Image: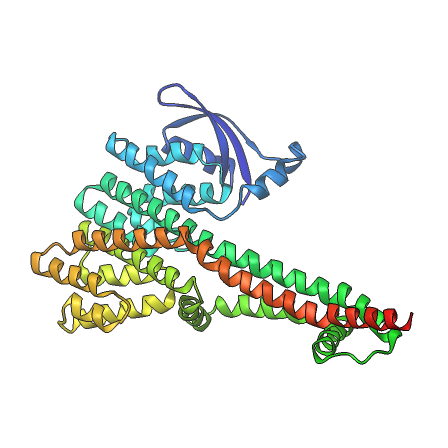
Length: 409
């Protein structure tokens, strides 16, 4: 769809400029007038006007991040609380949005609202940006007339979600960097270091110990088949990335990443904290229990945990209590189950789930801070083992050759 640059005046007389995707100039004028903007000048946008425009547009068409959604939700909360109409609010947000992809989405949402659709229905057209939880909260806000409060709850939840994801990434970053560094070091040793020593041993015609023979054989394998190994590594990573995007792959990866050494338990508690926080927010907003579990199961970003949450929903539909269905998943600690029981007895499940979320988040934060102290001894042992193998395989034969040379002298 072609793009048009426009200049216009708002109802207050302010100068408004921007870019609109539309099939024609008349469509642009109509859209501006519907947004209470009087067009002054409309011109087709020429791609060659700015040699850096293509690069800038490409950089601005990235996928929206949580930060973008947090900012949008905060802006909508402020505008709704001030009594600004939705269409006018969307116009201002569109003008301020730098992300071109998000700008196009907001324009389409504005068009859908102008045609009579609800805001939640317009958001539902973009499930890759707005999650089922986001849409459900907006729908509840529309139904209760508290749309500003719904946007506030969403922004607060997204801020906590962003913080949780950053903490999980920090938990994975250190071991990932160590593993990559060790892989690079092993590759250099096998391709450069050991072959140099192997030539020395070969010229000396000395009988090599078993450690040295294993190192030389491993090095020869790397030297002879490094290209095939590189191609195999690239194909494996590509295939694994494709598999993880499938339904079966997402479930399998979601299951086994919770069993990773050292970080798996942290990931599990972070995921359960995310579930507890989203579940509490949904219940506090008035979302029905079964619907809340359905929505939250898709919001935990782990298909394996989401499947257990769906099982909780099925148990509740059969008439079982939340505590019993949660215990059947074998994912929650006894303390959490006790708090759920208290919440059911007192009718304050949302408040108890807030406490559960805080409990998990504090534990995750503590474990992440101490993760480096847990991993460092393991890394020291592994690196020490590598040095020992190299010493036995490389330096002992060198010392033997030096001893023989001294005796011959």
